[in-house]
Amino acid sequence: MVSETDKAYIAGFIDGEGSIFATRSQRSISFRLTVTQKHRTVLDFIYDKYGGKFTLQSKNSGCWILAWYGRDAIQKVLLDLRPYIIEKRPQTDLVLEFFDTASCTNYRLDNVERQRRLTLADNLRVLNGGGRKYVVKGWKNHLSI
Image 1 (tube, rainbow, N blue to C red):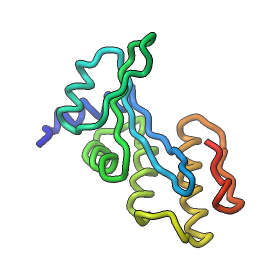
Image 2: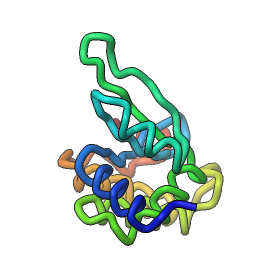
Image 3: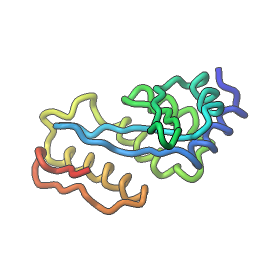
Image 4: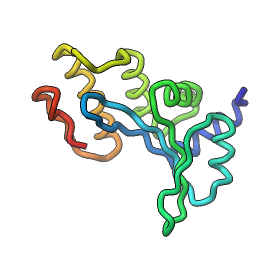
């Protein structure tokens, strides 16, 4: 069980040092939640509470990345921390909305559902400071991340 104080601390850390973004595979939109830090102490603390996967960004930078992949892992972290997330609340809400309304598969989607998912992913990109890159002209080439 994660204390409310720890949740608030971790949410603040994600607000400041974290990223929530969409990625593309051949036929799906997936999400990633990451926190990057040069010193692992705080990341180890977060890992003890929520798990994740560690990678070293590069040997030159010496920065560590703690990341969560997949619906279950990301949803668990974001739902738990949402009351305390401030800066990344819009991104958090978009990803949680996507998870709440999307089935586990992206195959055989009708055009309305495809458009809705693309719009959510596009809105996330814009919130993160990027331009609109999602094009709704069929499924195969609709994302250019």
